[in-house]
Structures are given as C-alpha cells and as structure tokens.
Amino acid sequence: MKVHGQYVSVPKAGERANGDGAFVRIEEGSCALFGVIDALGHGPGAEAVTQAATACLESVTLEWSLDRIMTLLHGRLGGTRGAAATICLFRDGELEACAVGNVELRSGDVRFPLVYSAGILGVNVRKFRVCSAKLSRPARFVAFSDGISARASTDDVRQLTPADACHFIMQRYRRDNDDATVLVADLE
Ligand SMILES: [Mn+2]
Image 1 (cartoon, rainbow, N blue to C red):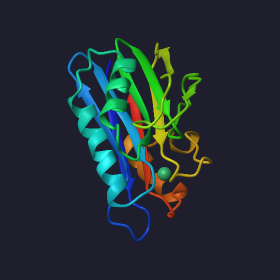
Image 2: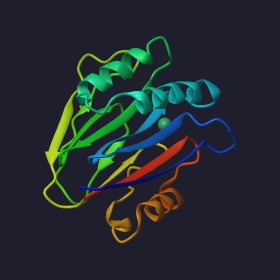
Image 3: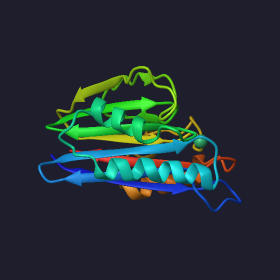
Image 4: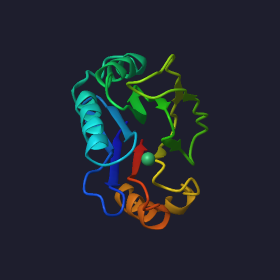
C-alpha cells in the first residue's frame, strides 16, 4: 500500500493569518495520518488554534486508535475557541475517519458513509464517531473546509495528480470570504 497526499490552504481575502490548516503524515509500513482543520473564525486567533492542532497531530503516535488521537486533540485544544476537523488514519489497508464539524470528506472510488460527530473540538464533543472502510483497490479521498463550495466534485479532478487536483478545486470552488483548504490523498 502506498499513500500520496497533497493540500493547498489559503487565508480569506485580505487576511494574512490562516485559521485553516492541513497535514499529511506518512510513515513506513504504509501507515498515514492526514486531515484538514478549520478553527472557528479567522485571523491570528484562529491560526494559533490550527497550529496547536497540527502540532499535536504531527507528534502523536500512529499506533493509537483514531478515537484516542481525537480525544488527545480535543484535550489539547481545551480552553481555545475550538475547531472543526476531519482526520483520517490509514493503516493495514483500512481507512478510518472522524469528522467533527463541517470539514467534508469525499471519495468517488469507495462508498464511505461518513457520520459527523456533533460539537466543536476543544469545546464540546460528547462522542467521536469513527467511520471505517477496507480498501481493496486504489482510492482517492478529497477533504475540504467550508471555504470551498460544497458543489466541489471529485469527478472533475479524477484524471489529475493530487497537487493539480488541489489547485483545480481551489481555483474553481474557493469562496474568498473564508479561509479555504483542500486536501487530496491517493491511497493505493
Ligand atoms: Mn471555515
């Protein structure tokens, strides 16, 4: 199994700080953790929350369950304004995903009925809902924050590399009144 992931993240028009963020961690043995984070609001305060979330996710061991990773992240963001995030853990041919708030996750290749967890990371999440799918063939996943229109389609970018797909979606579907992030991960 191999993982290839790319993302693009930009602040809202006229803003230098970015309250959105994304990361892709790939470890030997074909294990990967990746996701998109959208802190509440925008500007420097939101950017600080997203940076704290990314730092937490960059340092966590990938031997943990996704539920445990989300619980740690929730604790780390305690006392902040909070964030929405969709985080994915790919291990042994199986993808697990957990979405708190409205960061979308889509795949045109496998049925992946994501159930969103209610609440705000760092503020109030009662239960993390983790969805999983065994991948028996290559699959592409696209995650994006609400700075990207929900009309964005994974079909449009089927033939593009992950980097080109990110740029295409950003150009065509970005709403410039919010920070915007798109991440494309090919799992094969
Ligand atoms: Mn947003």
